[in-house]
Amino acid sequence: MNAKMKVLALALLGLAGYAGSAVAGCPSSPVPPWTSVTTLSGSTFTIVAGGLDASACRADAAIGASLGAIASVTDDSPTAEPSYRFQFLINPDAFGNFGGTDFITIFRANTTTAVGGNQNGLTVSLVPGPGGAKRVRFNAACTAGRCAQSDTTDLAGVTRIEVQLTQSTLNYWLNAPQGTTEPPATGTVALGDTTAYGGVDRGIMGLSGPSSAFKNAHAGQAVGFDTFDSRRQTYIGW
Amino acid sequence: MKRNLLVASLAFGALFSVSAMAQTCGGPTSWQPDATGTPAISGSTCGGDTTAAGYCGGNLDAPGPAYVMSSNFAAGRTFTNISLTGGAGYDAVMYISAQASGCGTNAACTATGDTGAPIPTADVPDGSYFVIVTAATFDTAGQCGTFTITSDGSFPVTLQGFTVS
Image (cartoon, rainbow over all chains, first blue to last red; front, side, top):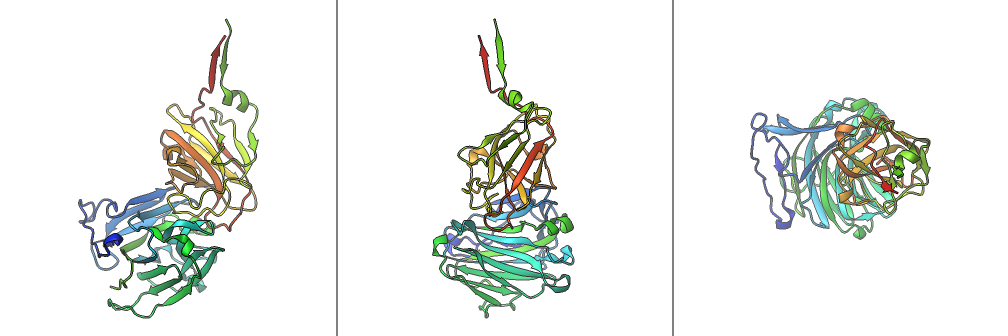
């Protein structure tokens, strides 16, 4: 797994090195560089050989059959960030076709203070598209609850997701062309005034919050995550 | 000489399940079932605690009010599973987190479960915990309902008082 864990306080791109080797040169644990790993209700989050970007390793996450199931890693390095960018790869193919009420969260950005009673300032989820397809939904918190939402087109195979979250706007890029120059965003959501949320102080990547239909149909199916990076301002790209 | 063993949870729980209004972080219900799993707790999350803005270290939202219990788990426990049934109006879930991490603080969870996924004894190390019943992360704001939480054994029962007269 390429975990380019950005040290936001330094505004530098930090590539965290791993010690130890469990599988084909892969680390035995995602901690460090992640702050912690959470596996509850029979869920697993493991590092395996075969990166999603032709690197050596990736992380596989699978949930148990419970609404409380969690298979995730947490990055506590952000500190009340008014602008927060992150990027990661996911290959959701192992889930197969999605039913009409299947959904599960794949990333959360927690904020320093709750907005509308919710400390998850941003929730990125897999949701159903037509004909069993999977899409990504970006759902931002505001004072009236989860009022800002946008869905992508259907996903196919390894998907690169980059997001910029500020206190007024959410921009996202889905499978942006290779390069480090920021292209036009795939989608933009105006958030209105969310200054009350105080900024992002935690990033959580992995599986959590499944719908009843999802945990019944997709428990134990492992999907790959890879190449997480986060920073304050500049486009991440690849 | 007369000896009175006052084992409150046994005396109270042998005949009744506990049914009460929703309990909060400020006044959680003490739950220490005996070897028969008595008492079960029946209640409603409606009107319960609304302190939390998230659960399990931010992995889950806190859309509805919560019914909060406090329990001590120790050696000698006999339970194998904690099970939950939920009423209409919401999707009931249960979260267990260490009391040392506070209540309603978005603390890390030690164990989670739902109406179809009991919490096994192996998921709960010895210690003092809050046991929370609330609405699932995807429920809409304010959703709540009734529930019954049961154990198939003790945590174990603890001695609440002892007098010699």
